[in-house]
Structures are given as C-alpha cells and as structure tokens.
Length: 162
Image (cartoon, rainbow, N blue to C red; front, side, top):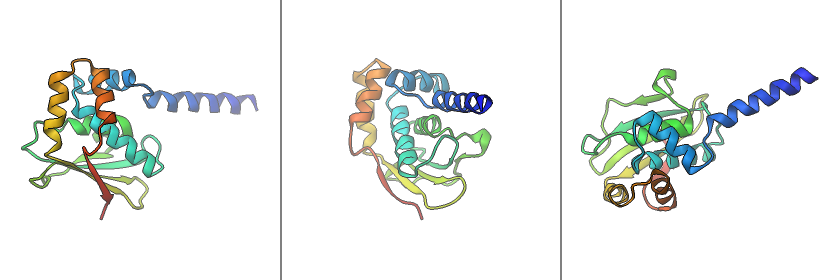
C-alpha cells in the first residue's frame, strides 16, 4: 500500500510539473523553448489550453497539425501550443503541414486526441496580428504580455475539425 501511495505521489508531482500554473511559469517556459516571449506565444498557449479543456485531454494526449502562412512573421504560435499541450515534433505529435494556411489566416491549427476522435480547428486571422504587434510594442514585461493576451477576445476562431 505504501508503494502505491508513493507511486501516485510521484505521478502527481510529474504531471503537475508538466503544466505551468502562473503567467510567470508560462513566460519562463515559453522563453526557454522559443528564445523570447512575445505576444504570439501566449496566444498559442491560450489555444493549447482551450483545446485541452474542450477535448478533456491531459499532457501528451493531443496531436497538432499546424498550417503556417508565410505572410505571418513567424510560427511562434506553434511553440505556445506545444508547451500547453506537451505535443512535440520529436513525439510526432506536433507536425508542421507542408500546405499553407489560407491567405486570410496567419495560421490554422487542427488539434485532435492522439487516440482518435473528433478534434478542433483553430484559425488565427491575419487581423489579429496588428493587435498582437501592438502588445509587443507597448508592453516589455513578458508576464504582462501573457496576461494581456489571455484577457483578449476575438484573436482566434474555433470550429469542429473535418
């Protein structure tokens, strides 16, 4: 019985360390993974957390297919989604699609349970980019950037994935 309790405690501790809990945690992790923490990364975190909640998924239980638009400055959103979902190219659970996102979208992201089932399609419209750029220009503190993005509505649309 004691071994079971110790094992459960270790599992709980491991899972709790996989998920950031505060804006500071997300900013620190995002900067470590991406090299900085501009406003695009917390939007990816927001999308990843939304998908985990809606799909009732834990870490490493989702697969991500990311469609980039070369007209967008970079695919920073993908790094935020990766840290929120714990999906990665190394696990083959985060894949950058060879096809591009449509012209009106900075990115399209399809997130599904790894074991199958219905998924979600997230579209970040190009119109969101100036709003995010304004946060980057006006706010230097990564934690404040994170909080600003988390409070903003209308930065992405979500629908059922085909």
